[in-house]
Figure (cartoon, one colour):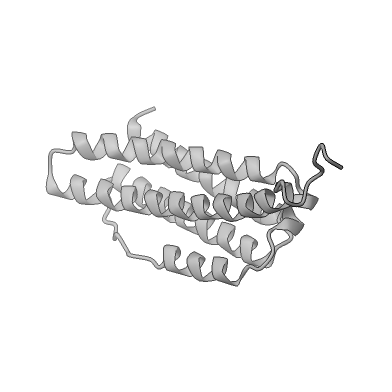
Amino acid sequence: MNVLEFAIKMELDGEKYYNDQAKITTDSSLKTVFLILAKDENSHAKILQKRSNKLSYELENNETLSETKNLFKGIKDFKSDIKQLPNQLDLYRVALEKEKESITLYEKLLLESEDDESKEFFSYLLKQEKEHYEILDELVLQLNKSNDWVESAEFGITSED
C-alpha cells in the first residue's frame, strides 16, 4: 500500500467513524457536526483518489470550522449526552487522536513534497485536518466543562458531611 492509498483509507475510516457518531448521538447539533466532518473526510478521500489516479481535482475552501463554532454556541447543555452515553467523551478523544494521525501524515508528506502542486495539495489537507482537530478539541472542552461542573467539590460530598 503506497502512502496515498494509506491516506485514502485513513480518510474513509474517518468518514465511517463520524457517520457512526452521528447515528448514536441524540443531540441534533452534535449530529450535524459529525455529519459535516464525515462529509469533509469523504471529500478528502475523493481528492486523494483523483491525485493517485493522476486526474484533475479542485481544492475547495469550506466553512466547516465557522459552521461548527456557530453550532457549539447554540448548544446549552452537554450533560444529557454524557449521562446517556458515559463513554462518549472517550470516543471524541479517539477522534482527536485520529485527526492527530492525519495531521502527522500530511505534515510529513508536505515536508517531503518537492513541487509546488504537491506542497499546495498537502498544505490544503493539513489545514483541513487541523480544523477538524480544533472542532473536536472544542467539543471535548465543552463536554469536560459539564463534567467538571458536576464533579466540582462545591457540589460534591465532602468528608465534613
